[in-house]
Image (cartoon, rainbow, N blue to C red; front, side, top):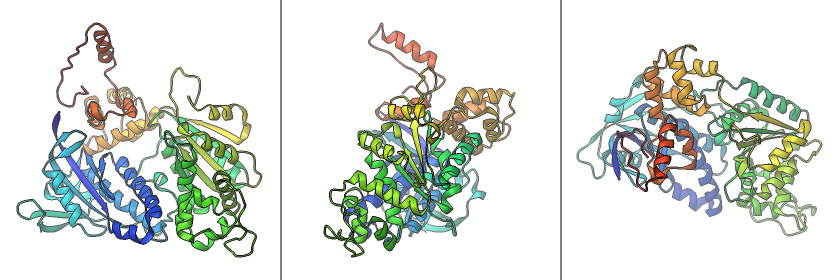
Length: 517
């Protein structure tokens, strides 16, 4: 089944990726690729886009508005420039092409002229350049917000005649200290409202860490509640005098992968002399967990010696888990650490062991572990369902563990962001349509701004904007987390279930985009 929609299509590609692979090798390139896609996906998500697929060392994404697509292109460039400023061994640059027009959605992909145009523009763009089609420029609602330059007519492979093309200028964040991993980097102009009390709790935890304590903050809430955004705000405040690390637990993993990802950010961004010093005596065990150590420092020294050559090095029999804990301890002796473990409800047993090791009351270890976990609201009394070890911590660890439960945004903060009068019909519609879930409220504000209704919106404006924030998927690509986008159809859903209990066939009729899938 195929559908046609007017959309913006974006392609981006890492410049000279093959040369980078040849220079740094497979292991380091795999780690760089993971960091690259984390950063680019973060930029796409922050600007309301939908990733379609990856292609080599780049990706394709779609957007419902032309303005969002250009905002994404610029944020993509900034995200990669931050990686470039962090990495000590390679130079990173991106090229981006964006087009606007009617395209066909079929089998989890998109087809049509704008898809070809965006891909071709990406291919001819220079390092660090963003190229746009004339159709996209003409469709911009707020062209005054973008510094555009006419590039004239460009010949694009496979397309008839030269195509008038524009470039969008962007600026590097000169002077900004690049010390936060991509998921904790705040996009330019991103909104943060309604979480002042929760942020104050995290600041209190950080004050204890700066005084030499170890603290764990369990931040949990439903999907879209803003746990990562909350911790990113703390990271932005402390990163000038702290080491900020981030790792994500993966479904089916043993949990160690989250800590490896977190420490890889330090390994690839620090100078070799410091890296050699803090890993002395931990090799080769630390190389097993963090191959980038070996890539940067070369092969580990023979057993019984150290990288410094003083003969007091390698610890015989040291395992990877113990080496990771030892490295964290050494790093925290030099500066306080904010360690963020995301999707902690997926942590496997090794990850739990590592968390227990960090939180085990080591005096002088200045670490705040921000544990971000998915939890449901409503009838379940367990604050973190399915995460028994966190639940146990919350009940027995005293001052060492702090719970930060994220519910809906305060109504007054949401109304301020949306520009709504609290007692208006539009405000009631916003509450009904978003449930005041942070991610939905922010997405609604973007759509209202795009439509010119951010101040003085009516109830119908709210409902139309919410409909635009729910991405078209189709049954083939409907994901578990998309249940959080389902709203306003509970009665029809229940009716469908009742009828399916009596009949093997159910016919659902409605206009395109009404939510049948």
